[in-house]
Image (tube, rainbow, N blue to C red; front, side, top):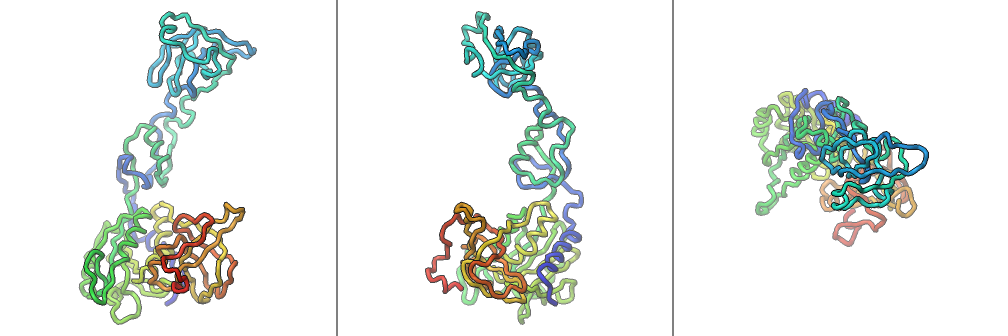
Length: 437
C-alpha cells in the first residue's frame, strides 16, 4: 500500500488525537521557574488588578485635584513629604505637591503627576529643605490623570489573564508572577517511548566493533522530540530477535502516549519490528516520499505506535514531516516549521512519483534588497548523509510531479535553524562538493 505524504500526515494526526489519551483533563501544578515552554491547562483568572493601585508613571510631583487648572497659569505649591515606591503615603492636601517616585502609590487626593524636569527648580528638595518645611515649587498647569497609571488599567481583578492552551514564555510567566501567583497549572507533557533496533547498532561511547555502526537515531530523535516539548523515555537498542521485541512491546502500558521505533520496518529478511508485529494491528506501508518511504502505524495495547526507517536522515525527515506537526496540534506547542520560498542555486532532478525532501543551506537575501533568499542543496538524496544533515539549516521540498528544475526556480524550504545572512553557502569540510552529491 502506498500513501501520499498528506494522507500519512492525517493518519498520524488522527492516531495521536484519538488514541494517545493525552491530556484527559489532567493538569500538574508547577512553580513558575519550571513552567517555561509548558501549556496552560485552564483559563487563568487574575486574582488582583494590574496595577493594583493608582501609581506614578514618572519621578515628579503629585498634584491635588483641586489644583488642576486649565488656564495655562503655573502653580506655586508647598512641597510635602516624599513618596518612595513601596510606601503608603499620607493624604495630599490642596496647595501641596508631593515628590513621588516612579511606581509609588499616588496619595489620596492626588490626580496628576508633573515630571521633575518640568518643575522649577528641576530637582527635588535637599534634606535640609525638607526639614524647614517651607520649600516651594513652581509647576506648569496640568490636566487630570497626567502620568498616572490607574489601578486595573492593564488588567482588572476577575478578568481572564491568560487563556487555556497558551504556551508559557517569559512574558506570560512574568504576567502570572505580577498577579502574585507562584505556581501555575499546566498540561502534562506528551510522553514517548523511543526504541532503536538492529544487530548492527551499538551504543556511542563503546569500542567500535567490525560490521557495526553507532546508534545515532536515539540521540537524533530524542533531541528532536524534546525540542517539540516531549518527555522521552529511551530504551536500549533491541537486537534482531522478534520474540524478545514482541514481549517487550506487549508489556508497555500507560502513561506512555506513543511508542516510536526506528529501523526494522522495510522488506528485508531481518526486519525485526515487522516480524515482531506480524499479527498485530500495526500497518506497514510505503509513503510516496524520499527519504522515509517505509512507515509503520497502528496501536499496541491501545497505545499509538509509529515506526520510522532506520537510516538517520530518513528518521529525522519522517519526524519533521509526520510527527512534529501532529504533536503541535495535539499538545498545543507550536510544531510548524517556518516555510519560505527560495531560489535554487543549481539544476535539480527529482523523482516525479515521490515527494523528495533534500537538505540545504538557506541564505537570506532580504538585507540586500531582495525579498526571496537562495537555497543551495547540501549532499545528495541519500538517507545516510549525516554530515550533510548536520551542516544544513533547511529542508528543501520537491513535491510529487516536480521532475526537473533549473537554477533560479522557486522551491519551498522549511527552516531548521537560523538562515545565513547573505554569505556563501557552507558545505561540510570536504572541499569537493561534488563528492557529496
